[in-house]
Length: 317
Image (cartoon, rainbow, N blue to C red; front, side, top):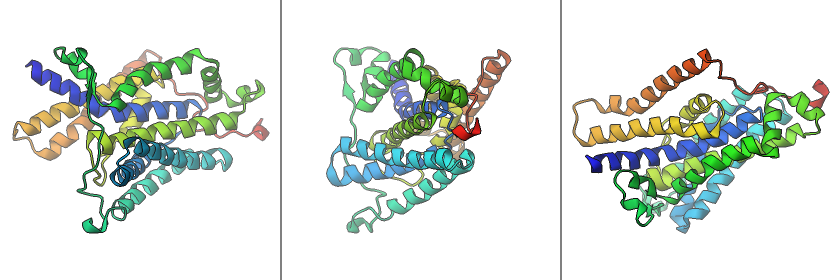
């Protein structure tokens, strides 16, 4: 039983890591007043480019840097359309998703070696291996927390640091001010456009790391639609977390936990059709998030940033 619980916890953490990176990135983006629905496409593009980079160079951290660059560039494009061009943020985000999904599929069929018909599918490259922390990793059950890859360890640090930055620093206060009332923030001397560009791009970089984790650690390699809709789950997690980085972990744990149970059921040879098992993590996550968000709404504690998805220019004052 202990071995089973340890295994479930390990899978839960691995499955939730990419979601937490992307969720924190989207929280910072939305806190600035920019709604980015392009996460799915950004994660796919980051996953395919990071894997291709690592396959040819063998350098895992170069792969992460490429993923951050790709995620940041796509986010910057969305920022340009939303902030400078004042395009509809929902439409712009959906375009990023459609573009990223299609381009990732195209690159997956063109970046591979000739020996594999230029396909990346089926290739094996370097991956992030678990790095056990002596003594702590040998503890019953909770030892799984201390036997993860380096990206998961970074998440352990990122969660409290992102919360502290957002709620306990002056820059975090400026960010929240822009997201709540851009007009007032502008009157206070805060460069609204600069803040929105910066945090949208930073958010895109974190989303990129989330995508890279999928192809370099969680499911090493490239397969089409490797994200499996995780980009849309991230949108739900941001709402559930009430735009608070510290709460993002709970939604990720719910998804990761059900994912772990799904794997165990499939491995045990259950008679439940595979399609239903694959649907289980998404369905359970959505149901739980809807119930909890409904409860928060009754408690009058749910509230998106007031300026979310609203364009702003100084001439509008």
